[in-house]
Length: 86
Image 1 (cartoon, helix red, strand yellow):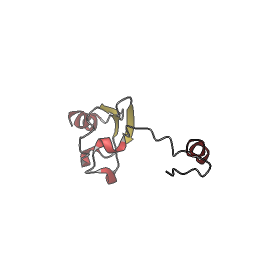
Image 2: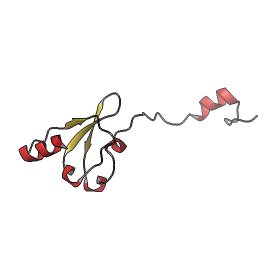
Image 3: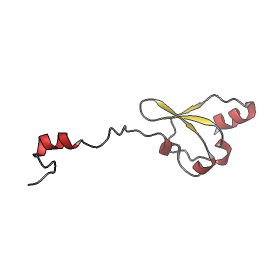
Image 4: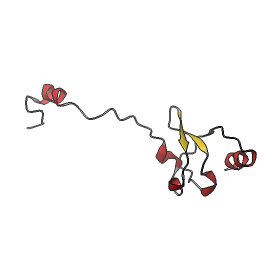
C-alpha cells in the first residue's frame, strides 16, 4: 500500500512490482498497473473497477494451459476409439 500511495502522490505510471499475491485490491488501486509475481516472472495487471475486492493473485496465473489432448494422440495410447476403456 505504501508503493500505491507514493505512485498516486507523484502521478508515476510505472508498473509497481509486488510478490504479495494474497493482497486485496482496494479502490485506491484503480487505474494503476501492478506487476504481480507468478512464481517465475512478473505479470502486468491493469486494475479496473470490477476487480475491487478480489486478490492480486487471481489475475496472474501460475500455470500455463497448453490445451486438451488431441484425438489422434489418445488413439495411439488407448486404441482406435480414442477413449479409455477397460
